Length: 281
Length: 170
Image (cartoon, rainbow over all chains, first blue to last red; front, side, top):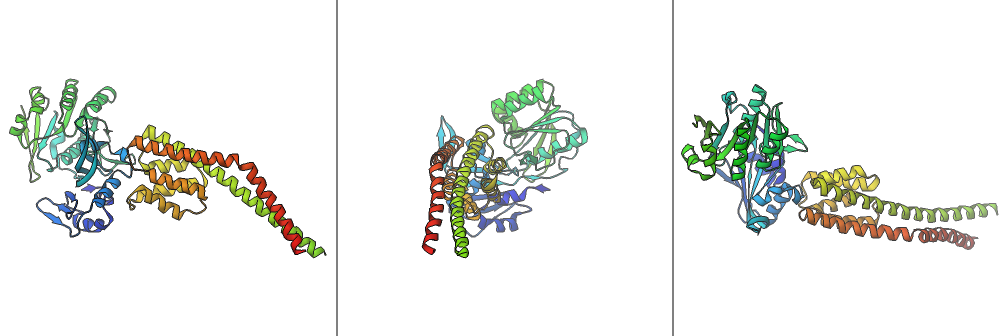
């Protein structure tokens, strides 16, 4: 298991670092900080709490560290998160400033949820042998991104397929100073920081991929771009938010994807971190 | 008599050297201000084009400069990388405390720079840099305008002071 733990620790207020390092280094999935509440360390089946309470300046410190004192680098803030260099994602809650109906910034952030990004090798097992497009679904926090990361890595090292990863939030293959934190294989190219729709278009036009991988297909623009890529003869690896097969078919945003039969293999992740493989059609 | 003469020559020479040292310091301060203005210029351009994070930006800026300004930005980059201080201003304060040989005029501008760093989005940051750069340019310009008269004053003071002390002592 690979994890850029130090970058995670460096984001935390100094008084918290040692304790979180001691308690959460191996198994912690999330750290939740709320103003005037003690920090919550979330593990798979339990939560642990530290004694000291979190202050507003602790949260501000976290955000300053996450953006490396450079607010202009946190372009995800309009979508409510910041991704830090080890691929860990910080979700934000608080008092928003909106413009035209969408978030422009936060006047005050009162809660943060920091999710630990880890690379776990060989969990995708024989999935790399599949010859069609793969859709990974599951409830939040069960490891869709982790499975996807391993699937890309394994496909690259075993099949030598040219894979372009359109990593909008820099979560799949985060980099620090232009070096990737997780193993990606010799045939994987990463396009990071642009929207999925434009990233897929760039990949199709310029990189001649055999497989395009995207994390969390949600918006209609993403769906249209994925369909377009499939029509161009490219295989797709994608993740989507749905509890199970029935739930997936109920969700309106995926209707077009399913109608077009873009994905034929469905991987459903369960809350106990196990997964099952099905044929979609 | 010859001992007195040698002493007088030493005193006059010492005073002239002191005057020259003052004028040299003045010229050095002027050069530092221009170097700093150049560094700020580079920061604005890089930020506008690449939007580099602050620590990378400072590192790159240090590579564009030399001397004390290079040290300041290299140390600031290291301080930001450590992720201990809660904001960029305190990182700059720590760097200024650690770095010696910074003339007071440059120090004030660097403090201003520290206040402006990492506070707002890209537009706010660029405006902040622009303000600091204007202050720096104005100060450098006033140094240049007064350079001749200041240097002459220091040198004259050195010679006259040396002569006066010699007369008094003899």
